[in-house]
Length: 299
Image (cartoon, rainbow, N blue to C red; front, top):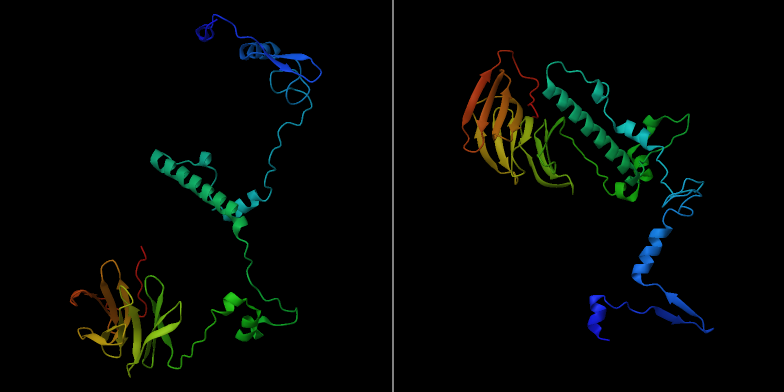
């Protein structure tokens, strides 16, 4: 008999025999007979789970696969982070504007997803807020800074600092990245410091009234509205420029996207000045007297 006969399938290979210790022989089925036996046994007998009949899952009293328990507090946490809305997306009624209705549904879906993610991530917030518990008869207004410092943790106590400001009242201005603070006292004290290390790298006394201070596009330049004119200084305290076109400035602001320094004086005029080449761009007179407040649209 040749080996090619086995490859062509004309000759059936003999059954494998396992020799046991007692001398008995147990035949081992071939792969084809094993498949045939599995087909004939399907649908007969008990299911895999439970006590009923069937191919896989029975209909008896089996327990089945274990299921995860639902989070009972998740609904309450989602409600805490959810935004108040006017009804469900199905209740939205926008007449003759399908685009607005679709946009409203999309916004509500995004709000629900954001609230769900915030509720799921709440378990990661293991830190607890610090507090001081007082007795019933004790007034909390009598707590001093030393009491708060003694009750704080090591990391919080390391950030403790104290300011001695004898030339107030003070005006403040932050850089756009929030890393530097510029303060100016009414009696002429100007200081520029780094908020992370609380290190003062510029401090000067201009020996006249300081009305307002304003940081410019970065920490290298800042403006000070003094008694009569507006002055530009660098981060070393060196005077770079004096703006004499507007007298008696009272308020300062800076437009970072246009590089414009805005100043308002006691006579009610508002001036816009380009800090790149120092020229005045525009001027507007309100005819309403001295300006007491000036703010820009954050958008």
